[in-house]
Amino acid sequence: MFSLLVSVALAAPAAVGQPAPAFSLAATDGATHSLAQYAGKTVVLEWYNPDCPFVKYAHGPGGPLTAQPTKVTGSGVVWLAINSGAPGKQGADPARNVQSRTEYGITYPVLLDPTGTAGQAYGATNTPQMYVIDAKGTLVYAGALDNAPLGTLEGPAAVNYVDAALADVAAGRPVATPTKKAYGCSVKYGS
Amino acid sequence: MDAPTVEVRLEAPAEVPPGVPFEVVARVRAPAGWHVYWGENPGASGLPTRARLFGVVHDAPRWTAPTLHTDSGGIRTYVYEPSGAAVFLARPGTPGTLALKAELSWLACREACVPGSTTVEATVHVVEGARAPKPGRTRLPAPAPASLAADGTLRVCLPAGLGYFPDSTFESLGVVPAHDGTAWVARLPADAPPEAAVVYTRDARTSWYVQLGEIGTHPPCP
Image 1 (cartoon, rainbow over the protein chains, first blue to last red):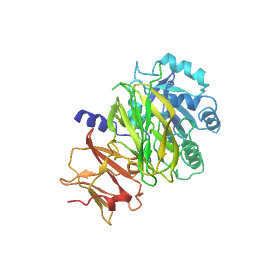
Image 2 (image 1 turned 90 degrees about the horizontal axis):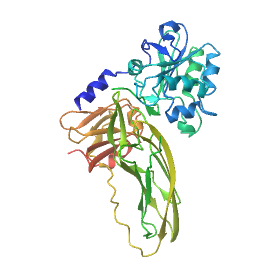
Image 3 (image 1 turned 60 degrees about the vertical axis):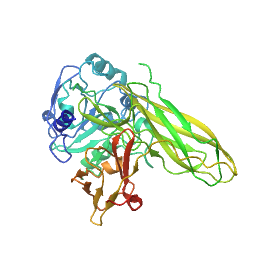
Image 4 (image 1 turned 135 degrees about the vertical axis):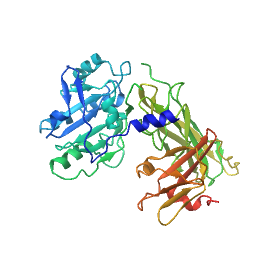
């Protein structure tokens, strides 16, 4: 019980309104991407596991992540996927991540975080789980992609929280919904 | 990977008298090594189990108490490992036959996660003179002795050292009750929704709940 509490304390997550935690991670093609290199741009982080059914759904035919990233990056926003799966865990194999970019038609970098350091710094517990960082490097949204897990709508109308946050950022407004409980598979950390 | 076989059963009395509420129980059981998530809040990851009942007027389901599951990385989730249930209080009308249908959906996880759903059915005859059904044998959390003061101070008069499971609404308040030696105490915001609820568990057989909007019906603190 006490070791459990300690591990939770170590995972004290990034807070909305605070500077987004720095990271520097290798993508599936070997190129390194750091948050610092995108200073001055709006950045979207997507926690990723190619074999999680929620990720498969989101990147599958008609899924919410098939068109959204391309639309968003077309307007100058940076979109990065991060896989914090530990070696040997589901969806963590680098070759599988390379292949999944082709399978899902992903054009943005998929960064590998096998030690889970970036994932723990952001408090990512789900795939997918989304973060929006503004041009000043402040975390302005953390949570669910939308309100329709596996396409089943919860609530009267569909809301994509990332689109909503990006619209607020682009308009210079505070993000109206800065957090929303994420849903999905657990991130497959190593310890 | 093979999909896990999650067993779902719908239990209802064969005969009930008109106008007397009775329990309809939808049970879910995950295979060994797997879990599904609490219907009120999955915790830090996952997806709540959903249950919808058709064919009779009924109240919102109440869910049996979950247990804590900790994944690597310290991810704490609220689960049925292996089994849990949604209990509906059904309100039969005039004599006749009720064709009950329940739709259940869940996310079953071990390391991998697999979503699933099914529909289960049961038939209940509403008959004049039928024996009133016995109280359910499904163990639901009992109302905890509790009070909510005008300044928003919630007191849940239960011992320390219990399992704590806030529902999604209570969790979103961002407040976690702390034990002061006699009760679990928290200062709630003025706009705390009446449906917000918390479950405390001592073991698999003993659990309690507090729902803010129902506190007047709970036993008072001693």
